[in-house]
Image (cartoon, rainbow, N blue to C red; front, top):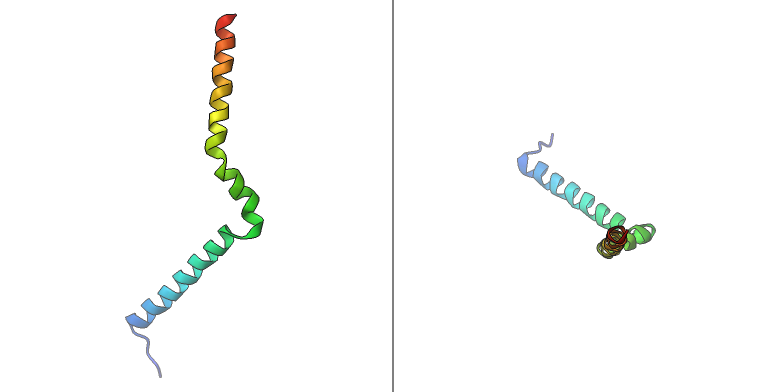
Length: 64
């Protein structure tokens, strides 16, 4: 009968965590995520556009 000690469990746990990590990395960089990643990459620039429109709207409201 083979008994497992704590070090065997730690080794199994390390391998499982590594596999989960690699799975998440594969999912995040897979081809079907490209559109979502591109949209997320442009979010900071979208904020600038919203700020510009808000300022223009405020200027228009002040003139009236």
